[in-house]
Image 1: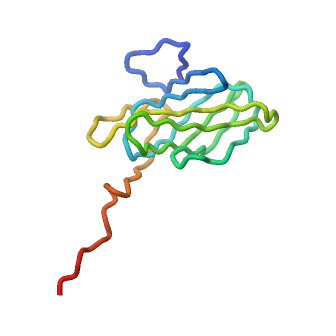
Image 2: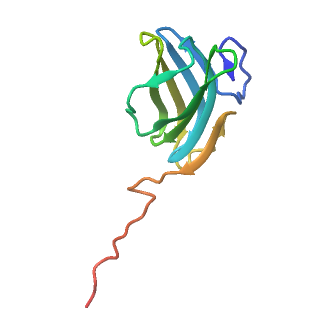
Image 3: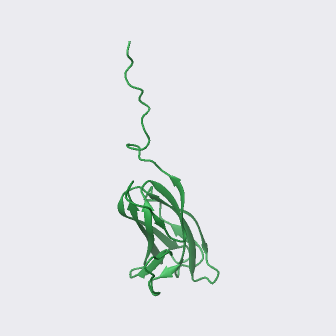
Length: 151
């Protein structure tokens, strides 16, 4: 995983992690496709201790599947499910708090550029995997309506 301390290539293939002020970690996922579901796995450095707790889920588009402390106790590996449900830049925040030190918390800000249908090909970064499709109820799912009966 890249941090912004390291030089970026023209066509970056790693998830880019940027440590911002106020205990925010920015996680850039790259180009995603509208109406697809992605599994996102990355490692972030933190000082929260091994055990974490989480605020209630506020978004239907981002779900923490699992986490575990990394080997040297300097952070955690995270595994999220991210649903790309709106076009253009899509940002979802997830707050984690230390179980041992409740005053310590961290906001993980995951974001990706979501391409609409026919707007291009997504460029998935290492650690981002497509795991499904979630059609729009209005456009892609079709209708059960059979029309009027003619007698």
